[in-house]
Image 1 (tube, rainbow, N blue to C red):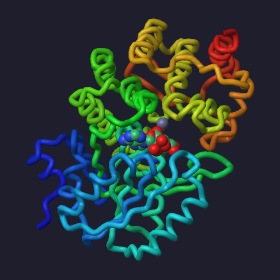
Image 2 (cartoon, rainbow, N blue to C red; image 1 turned 135 degrees about the vertical axis):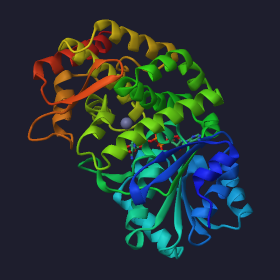
Image 3 (cartoon, rainbow, N blue to C red; image 1 turned 120 degrees about the vertical axis):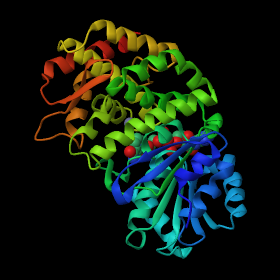
Image 4 (cartoon, protein in one colour; image 1 turned 135 degrees about the horizontal axis):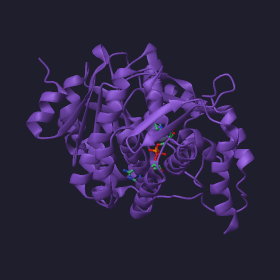
Length: 385
Ligand SMILES: NC(=O)c1ccc[n+]([C@@H]2O[C@H](COP(=O)([O-])OP(=O)(O)OC[C@H]3O[C@@H](n4cnc5c(N)ncnc54)[C@H](O)[C@@H]3O)[C@@H](O)[C@H]2O)c1
Ligand SMILES: [Zn+2]
C-alpha cells in the first residue's frame, strides 16, 4: 500500500497540516530543504510515474534543477513548461497556450501536474489541472511566502479577465502541498514582506496569541530564520485549513480571509495590478484601513490600532500609501473601484471589520461617509508629502 504523506512527514520529522475535506483531503508538508525530498513525497500519490512541471522563469533559473534531480531519484519522468514571470501570465491566452503545451506533451488523465512557483503559477496551473481532460491531479510546490501561507491551500484556482482579477476559475483542490521554507531564501525582501501581510492577517482575524507571537518573532520570520518561518507557515496554513474545511466554497466564514482585501483590491486596481503596489502591500494597507474603519465605527479600541501599526513598522511593512510618480491618490476614485469589485452584492460593499486583535467579523453595514473619511486619512497623508 502506498505510504501517506502524513506517515512520511512523521517519519522524516517534517511539520504537516491536514486539510480535511472528505475525499478531497490532503496534507501540507512544511519544512526546510524539502525540495530535495519532493520526489519521495510525490511518488506515493502518483497513479503513473510521469508528471508535468509548470513553473516561471525566475523559479526555473533558481530551483528547477533541484526538483528535477529529486524526481529522477524516484524514477519519476517529467516534462517542464516554463511560463513568463508576473501577474500578466494569469491570462486566457497564456492559459490556452499552457493547455496546448500539456496536450502536446501527451499528459494523460492519470498523470499529474506540479505547480512550482508563486501564486501566479499555482493559480493558472491549478485551473489547468481542473480542465485538462476534465480534470487531472495536481501538486502545489509554492515558492513564495504568500503562496505558502495562502494561495496554495484551499483550492481557489483561476486567471484574470480584462473585466477583473480572478474572474475565471474553479474550486479545485491539490493532492498535496509541499512548502519548503528554504526556497524563501532567494525571494526578494519586498515579496517576503508582501507575503508576511497575509501571515499577520491570520493573527488579526482570529488568533490573538499568534499576533503576540509575531510581535516577538515576526522580525525573525522576515529576516530568514528557518524555525520561525516553519512555525509562521504552519500556524497560517492551519488557520486557513480550518476555515476552508468549514466553508470550502466561500458561502460564509471563508469571507473572513478577505480582511484588508476590500480596500486592498481598490488600491491594486488604482495602481494597475503591477509592481507599483503588489497584492500583499495592498492587503497590508487595506488591513490598517479596515482597522481604522472599525475604530471609527466604535468596534475596536484605538490602542489596538496603534499596536498593529507599530508591528508593521517594526518588521518593515508598508503602513502608508506609497507615493507613486504621476498618481494623485483620490478617495472618491478608490471608493468607485470598490464598487466595481466582483464581490459587491446588490450594490452593498462587504467589509471584514475587527472588534479586537484576533476577533474579526463580516458586515455590510457601513456608511459611505465613514469609508471616505478613512480613505481621506491615508490619501491626504501621502499627497501632502
Ligand atoms: N488562489 C488563492 O487562494 C490566492 C490567494 C492569494 C493570492 N492569490 C494570487 O496569487 C498571486 C500572487 O502570488 P505571489 O505573490 O506568489 O506572486 P508571483 O507568483 O508573481 O511571485 C512573485 C515573484 O516572486 C518570484 N519568485 C517566486 N518564487 C521565488 C523564489 N523562491 N525565489 C525568488 N523569486 C521567486 C516570481 O517569479 C515573481 O517574480 C496573485 O495572482 C493572487 O491573485 C491567490
Ligand atoms: Zn490576499
